[in-house]
Image (cartoon, rainbow over all chains, first blue to last red; front, side):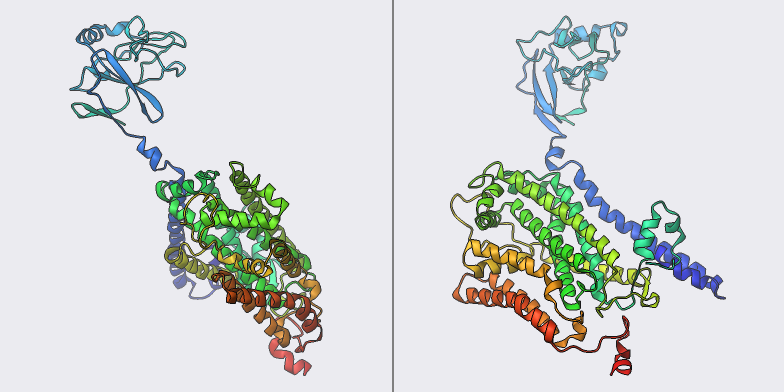
Length: 191
Length: 397
């Protein structure tokens, strides 16, 4: 391409220039596109190397066996470096969160949007307070659960209900629900 | 030096900082008679670029530690996407680099490129060679397989009291590997710097040529582009082809690193061989018989190589026109190969004799043969101007 330009200038004045130009254009495009493909083929492994390695990729999906979790108790699992709360609700707690009017919520979200269809008694939440990122209390039996029988952030006092919706500030958003599904009736796959 | 600007592609002309590029890589005038040996500058630069980039990439996952070093490289090979590729490029890049560097050194000795006001260029070339070997050694140790451990211990013994600074103690401890890694980076970056200064010095002194005479006339020099850029790019394609063959068929050519990991408590591995490009120096040490004398001979070898511009007493620079010295230069190259082979042999009586004989000849070449043969050896008439070999008979005989 650039390297041919000197030769091109010399032949430019030749009588058969009109005949030669398309051929040279074709050669330029051919060389240029071959070089672009080659450069991309070299760059690809170097860029892919910078992405996540096999260990990091393996952390992306976590399987959790929920069968040992009794009603009204929960566990904390690690998913992508973050704590994830898994809690099994009692029928009384379910009724309470379903009965909550939407206008009372700081960040309105329906009950159905907080649980997985078919596993409505299970709540799965990323356990980081949306306010400043503290880990809310309430997953251990000895923890305080706050006034709404969910979670209570120890840093600034934000309170969440049993499906992780914020009921008292300073947090303004609900605890996030990670992507998950029931791989089997007793196994959830997070990620 | 005054140059006539040669038309370069307009795109490059108008780009920012195009002035430097155009002066140094397009319009720069080189002697008319350069041969294939003069393509090796680009090959060395290409190898250095490959090693620098892959080295930076490898450093993202490398962990310096007596146990972690080997494991982190295995991790790169198995768990990091294309880690095997980056690592093998780095490993086999050393073979390509030292292949090109050794051929460049041979070019210098054969054509006397250290003559005609280029002794500083030669000193920088030898210094670059030394720094690259240091980088290669520390890189070999960084892998920390069994052979690396043995090499580190032997090097520490060679360096005496300095060896304790190298190891950060009497043996390998948690402080050892971080400083090996730092030394690898430091020596590598210094080598890059010396290579850049050497390039500038070579341009300032004017490119040498196979006839060994200065190319000062306007008609003796032609622009680098397109005449030699095209040729160098062709050489680069051939070079990359050889690189690809080694990479695909002999990826462990520059050193077998699959040996047992970590530090065997008080035992050396069966065969602690350094990579091929260090075998000659391994042979010198082997012939020396003791650590102290081995260190002395290695330092002496580098000093004599650097002193070549002053050891050469001849009026003619290029071996094209000094037939008696030409034979000795070839013998020196074969001697170095023999020394490398001798160093790679199992430790038998024969191997020691080979190493000793080759070592004696190596020093003989620099101390006795070079001053005598270049000073008193037969020479042929030199062409009046570079590239005019065919006119010698008509003009001078």
